[in-house]
Image (cartoon, rainbow, N blue to C red):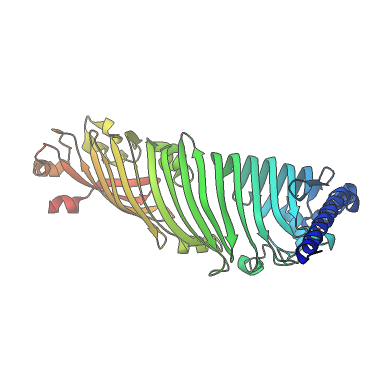
Length: 427
């Protein structure tokens, strides 16, 4: 028998033996790890670690192009108090709940035979997920999450250390295993975050070298769409630094501004487009405000800004044109910057209606503002300036429109509005 034939026989024998071993594993795995014992062990371990209440259908192993551990029909519900008692550390979490149809793990086979659980893929589907903090809440319905390429090394690595979870004294980055990496895709029919509802959410990205990247993110907001991307860096900043960019297309102002500027969202009636980018450190709320840097632009129209109570102070100047307090416009354009704790209006214009408006100034997080406004009045209209009415004609341009300088001060929710007599005199 030649060397080649002997090698071929050996190869066929080896392949056949390997095939028989694989078949035997497929047949014997459910017997090696009975479902009822696995279910009881998983429930016991999860409840001990979290203090939560965990319900679960019978765990089972299934062959789907590899062994999969299937946890069906489960729910996990708990509170921050439960977690504090279990882990001995403070947290702002109030309560949480996950109701799922199936939680599927794809473990690595050899570590499993050594009674070690090393997960290569995770998939979670379910009808509802709710997380409630002290000042916020997150809720998703009909959600789907798949994590693949999960690498935690050959030995199981704890995701947290006793006494550190939420304590506020240890950076999150220091708790993340250095070799942790994975990619993910997720979707949900609807999502509720920061008291704002979204629909048709899709996102995907990955985690490696202590950096989380969401490369694709899209969602519906009312009749418009939102897209964006972000990274959270725990390598250079163990507390985490968020860098992001986002776009909005054809979103009603009432929906886009509802959380960020609720008073303005109730007054502005138009569809908006916007692009913005920014970054901040996420250690705590105070740090976020100190480090937040945001820049972008916004545009939209046609529409109307219902500003009657804002402009109450200029009532004497408008005479029989009190309807001008509802500012109708064909186009809105706005460039903005948030830096060093202030929102800077670098340029704001409302044009194309009875009046044209241009503004520049700033607003701080407490609502204090200082904004200069140039108001172009309708052709032929003369405001009542009292003792200064003689100046009105000198302010009229070639189109017969008077340019009236105003100043906004006080609080943004109810600003003081008046003629800027200094600028008026200069003109």
